[in-house]
Length: 284
Length: 331
Image 1 (cartoon, one colour):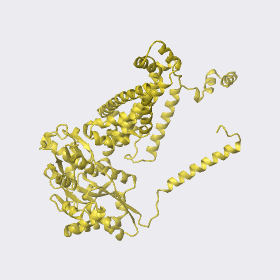
Image 2 (tube, rainbow over the protein chains, first blue to last red):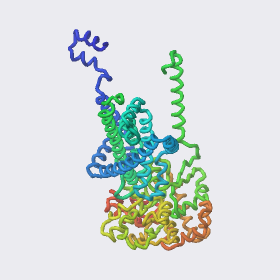
Image 3 (spheres, rainbow over the protein chains, first blue to last red):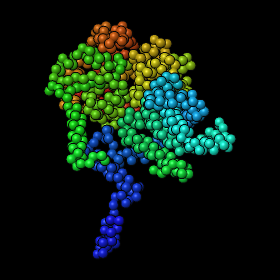
Image 4 (cartoon, rainbow over the protein chains, first blue to last red):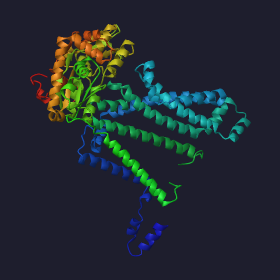
């Protein structure tokens, strides 16, 4: 390899340490080191920009202010309770969405009519951003979290249904035939053969559904404008904007991003422990 | 990229990309400076409601355009004081009109602005429809709508809660933020329990059968509802525009006092005929509505807001928040 031969040629005179330094390349560093260095550089540039250009703090906060606001927000409990409320509503919305998606998918597997209904509904409703349904939901369900859960369920059902039904449809015919040989039919076939076989698609559907749901709930809370003590992260950002607490707005955004990253990592971990380990999906 | 073999083609592509980026940047930057006369631009932002009657009359009759021919006057209606404040900070809006709340929140946050003129004093009512709500302790879980978290209505409710329930924050979890027209709809259709709003919406709700159970004049005495504010820098750089603005607001007040019928006609025309002149005249002459250019009770509101921790910094004296065309004796 070029690096090795270089260092072995050079290490004839200089010490081995210098030789090792010479072979230091960006791509040879571990992933987390590279990302951390880049992140630190970005934050440094951000801080320099704010300090040198004397930016109006009401318009744009420096990383130092954001860090302080973030820390204080968690210590005070505002960010914690806001995050908890948002996650709670998202959880309920996802459960509702998963239930409806399961019903639709199972019906689609059992009959051609069911499949047609699923495909038709999906193609009509999936392109709609769920947040666009919020005004209707408020009209129907009033100013309660039911409206939010309805909107969330709508955001979550279609990605899950699409992925799971694709999973069901792409089960290898051999496995289906083995199942039939064993006398499995109807619900037992679904439970014992189709569902495990569709696991990679199910997890990927849940991941996508969660991503849509997370973005929708934050947007809905911003529009919904619930004030007082009962708001989630979207409301926290909105309220901070009304009271000109710009560092808090940024701190809220950082929290949203961090939670998004955390859940992504969680889903990846689940995938590694299940479908990748069992060879049902190749590692990316 | 993979399909392009020759160096020449690659260079050509690179040049095309650079040209596109340059064109986009130039057109993007060019949008900022508009072409106008020597007087510059003055964009005036206001909110929906008859609280802004003077500005609506000035806009409809073109008084400012007459007095300031060199200045490009723009008029924008926005939905909240916070939006107007954001616009002023961004430089899109030069003159803002809004309630006491957003002005004081801006002051506390370090926005360098002052009041150019009051617009009115209005009694703000908490309207309810249901019989079961007689005072604030009856609300339980019911929602109370108000226009924004930093609005004067939010402060009024806190003061009412402090007086009637002993704790300013007692009703915080009942508060829902809705714009005035949406709140009107929601109250009348039974979706919310109460609506702390302003004229004319509270009068419209009263006509639909709602009744007031809390009045802001009972808590704070007669006080300003809306006023006009300008950033210190813009005010100092444009004395001619400020003079024209203030004198025309005074002219509009005189018109409303001397000839409310005529004023109502102008407002009705401004609304595109959606609301009739009789309705406007009814709203403007109702009790608890006064049009005046003198601000009132700002310091009292500021102190209360500081006490309940809505803002941190409060003005010590009127000089800090009024321009010199207004008397600093009372605000």
